[in-house]
Length: 376
Image 1 (tube, rainbow, N blue to C red):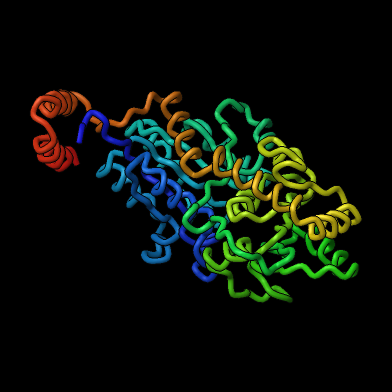
Image 2 (image 1 turned 180 degrees about the vertical axis):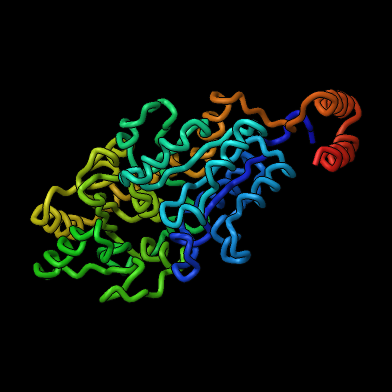
């Protein structure tokens, strides 16, 4: 081991459960974020769940989070900002201020639903304390910001151990995995009803609620991925309340080898080529025609599915996601894979590094353990 090449240490601040509620099950996005970082092997990391801390202790997790930051002294903090129950799922302004002004730890915030005006308003509120934002769903929603240069749009990272092409026969002709009951997604149910009236059966799974707003059994992340693996065509609706988004389903479907058939939008077309990597549709009639065409012409469908899957793996993997974040952090704050220290601690660090470069791995391991214990 060469201690001079020690990986950076990242502290992830995530929601454990969807909407911060245990009854809604584990958050797929948060799971993909941490799992993709683990798979990338680009950094060491720890995770703090604000919603879990509140559920266990009955108080917000800010004090415990700050104590963890003081103990770990991470090179970078990355927060997935929760939309619901913000006082429970996210650090407060005072905590962010201390990270910025007292601890001076670089901070990145992942935003998953920037088409929500409320989320963009919150982002602007915390903007002075954040080094960079990572919108996952839109290339333009942050243009309203007074500092749009702080926003670097990426994509939803995927755990490729769960989302992958099983290279087997697919027994579902066309599927849609997602919510139908949310008020922002009413167009989805309309599309599916019109398709069914035309005699096309769409396999539907997922979503938080069954009929009449009753909480349903949510799919586990493995069960969720299995639907994509079984599907020849994966249907995706990209709009929320009429505004286009780059959905995580785009990458989940492609990683699993299904052909993506998606509502026409400019967000997905930024990353993938229409009719080469996926197929867009304009309206119900166009959707019905394309379903019938691509189910009939298997070779064309499978070619598009392969193209999309290959591009997703090559350009938009979880490793590429985290590599980009570390590059952004380095440019913003010159983040280096190093132990944070000042004054006499900094001099001691340099001395240990110099000794380690001369005396080798055994000394490096022994001294690193002592140094961390002394610093923390």
